[in-house]
Length: 493
Ligand code: NAD
Image (cartoon, rainbow, N blue to C red; front, top):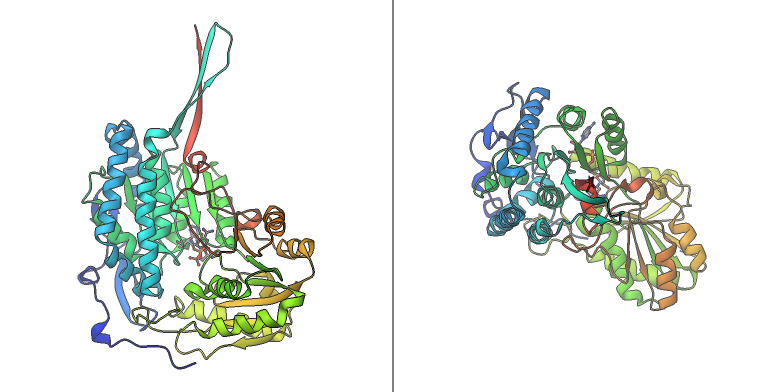
């Protein structure tokens, strides 16, 4: 493979948002520096250059942000707003994000290295997510319960209060939208903490929210690293719920800290998803889907299909198709139109993924890499001759790396697919209906795609993990449970 595609530095986008002094925290509708005055820098992984200085929030800033969110929650301006007004504001948010979709996608590509076509697609999806949630406020019903004639019993769905929304670096706008949409639709207020590697789009969204009728303090945005800013938010007694997207290790920490005051918690964590290819599948389509599953977005996706299982009888044929498809994944600057894979998000992350390639060799694996790494660019790698106990088969790598293994029959495919602590997603490739549905039913995963990979709906279907891939669901009807309490009212007549 040739060297990564480049873009003339003069042609790379330089949004006006990046200019000026350090980016501040959004608290109660106003921009403010961290009380400590501390800042950190965020970098462009394609060039290694600093993009902007950003405020690093400490516990005292979290106090202010949570207090603002609490005031906004209790103020008539948000708690008693009509559902119709809340819908209208969510539609305004969708419109203002849509009007700035290009800029938001550029900020994400600069900050975390995803190709522009991909970040743009994710921003467009996020706009639709807000439109989806704009429909909910007028449809959050309680129930009446059967009772004897002397009583009247009914339930109300009420917001939780202040939600701490903590997100990972790999899909900044999308993950924020997935949390703001349902939290706001159900009447909660939010303190959002984006990841330290990619905080810029969240801050720009903060500016855009100020252009809408969203009352001040309903959404506050605090930046900083996990150990200080994230921990202070999770620890804060004034926060009613943490909605977290990130790694399993930090998810466990969130659960531990939240237990102190029994905060509600939604966890969207990692995965080691299986791609299962039966001998009757359209093998060309399956190979395209399988490679997209682990190489699209440089494999920096929670749903990455990093364990590929192919039925023994078609292994060689499928392997050839996989290698051919991997060659189509051109490395390049996120802003080059032909780029399929940008750089990994940071040098720290590049080293982590590279270390897994060494681990695979140490474990006796055979590696097929279609090209060479350069800078933070890493081509796709297929690992063969590793068993189910290999670390590269068990642990989430979060880079463009997958292992190829075989299975004998449907039961074996299900058993091997389930042989993981994770359970976020899976894809099944077959033209046989019985195999498709039996495998989908047997896999312990939150989402199963059949003859597709990583299709997403803008809010309509639930998303989340079985086992150690998470707790709770985002989207679908289930999301209402994640952001509301049910109150029973019993009336003596
Ligand atoms: P991470 O867990 O390191 O960080 C996620 C967020 O948590 C960041 O904002 C970080 O600053 C914060 N954080 C870190 N330590 C904290 C602490 N002690 N208390 C509170 N907050 C803390 O994850 P990452 O490296 O940013 O993202 C990659 C991980 O996210 C992968 O495991 C990936 O699978 C997962 N992910 C899951 C989904 C999903 O929907 N299931 C989506 C995207 C990414």
